Amino acid sequence: MNAEELRSLYIRFFTSHGHTQIEGKSLIPENDPTVLFTTAGMHPLVPYLLGEEHPAGKRLVDYQKCIRTGDIDSVGDASHLTFFEMLGNWSLGDYFKEGAIEMSFEFLTSPQWLGIPLEKIGVTVFEGEGAIPRDDESAAAWKRLGVPEDRIRYRPRADNWWGPAGVTGPCGPDSEMFIDMGKDPCGPDCGPGCSCGKWLEIWNDVFMQYNKNAAGEYIPLARTCVDTGMGIERTVTILNGKKSVYDTEIFTPLIEAVEKASGSVYGTDGDRDRSIRIICDHVRSAVFILGDPKAVSPSNVGAGYVLRRLVRRAVRHGRKLGMAGPLSSVAAAVIKKFAGPYPELAAQRDFIITELDQEEEKFLETLQKGEHEFEKLLPNLLKDPRKIISGRLAFKLYDTYGFPLELTEELAAEQGMTVNRAEFDEAFKKHQELSRAGSEQVFKGGLGDQGEMATKYHTATHLLHKALRMVLGDHVAQKGSNITAERMRFDFSHGAPMSADELARVEAIVNEQIQRDLPVTMAVMSLDEAKEAGAIALFGEKYESQVRVYTMGDFSKEVCGGPHVEHTGVLGNFKIQKEQSSSAGVRRIRAVLE
Image 1 (cartoon, rainbow, N blue to C red):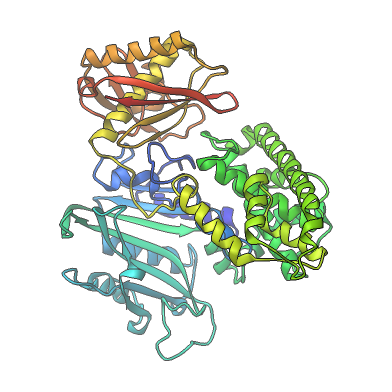
Image 2: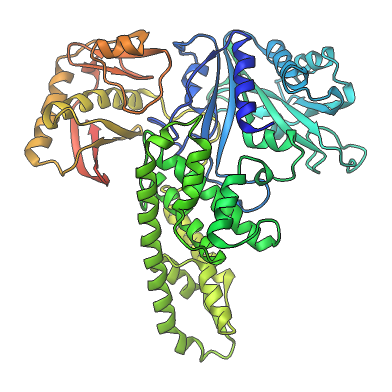
């Protein structure tokens, strides 16, 4: 079974069981300062898991593009990926454990669907902890369906508990499904959940059952929800009996593009294979980030920094393979492979290729500068009888010129020298501690701040968006925002810096609407109805058939997912602190509510 067939089958199964298919969302999350990218299929749905009503109903299904940045340095082995696709189905106060487990079992084992033999399936459930009982309800449901007791394992919190985003919030036990890969058990206790490789996880049903309060108590939720996740790449690997995600048809055309550009043959050399996998993963990730409706460009901060790091790491490994020609030849293979389920990639093809080529060219210039600097230092370095280059010097080349440690080590080895890696790691660790807030944050399964101030700032983005269109013109469109309890950042399309007069007019318009104390109302309607009513919708964004439209008096009407205050008078005084460039053709405003 290939990825396209799995994606289609999953959607068909759940729509036949009363679920409404919804569109996957952007890779750049809206108004969530806790994370740079959408990191799980459930991420865009957290407000609805917390109690908001979804316009599409109580049973939902979709496929969602995701990026996780925590394991970038591990990419290159047989399993790690930066970009991946997640299949998910949700119950928002409808069915719960038994219903979810029955559908999971049917999809996995029925000959009409995946047709996995029952004897290959094992599951884990939560073993309980403190005042929270063990999940006998899930275990009983699996047993009724025919899963033997010795393949139903109780596991601790670390394995079978989905916690809240922060200190408080919704949480609950989960039940994970595993496939027996046919290996010999590692010992008498080997079973589902064992990490020896005999059992591989294929699916996860999360049961949002409790709300953890500030006192650390777990209060049963009045409305329980189900959130499930099945990774396409991992599942296709398991279903086809492959050892690596890179051995599936998902990556075949990408690997062929690298082979053609480099003259390398995949599967013949461990180090070469690692470089090929890194190029395939990183270029695929970069293409999806650049092809997103809320695309960011390579930069030195936030999501743009992650994108830059992906591209430059791919360039470096392409260089190791002796690749002739730019990475965009691999990007073209990615676009061709994935444009079916993700048509935005084909629509943004020119932008993707241009941005990749420009970033690759910049980095090659960086490498040349670094090599030149190394050559200048070399005479003194060769005088050291120990033939060791200090880690501090290697870090300076990295920090000042963007010169990768591996290349310093390569150049050193050519001269019979080594680099003090421990010293480099120490300098790098200090650097990370200083800049930790900026670059790579890992999402832990919850929602960004939806407190009182963050809600006020989110509401104010609507007023700012409309005011910018009034002052600068209708070409202005929101390109992203980042909100905390202390401030708002708002990115918008505009080709030139704003004048002091323009900024003053925008600020005055927003404050006028706040002083008018406009009512904020919400209505659910079709996207066509919303557009006919004059509502602003983000260009290129994917919406459901039914959307929420927030109206602020006679001033603003916008398609949005919330949260919002009930009237604008509570916002306070709106003050623009800074206006600057964000990327080509995109400006950024930083503002506060006083």
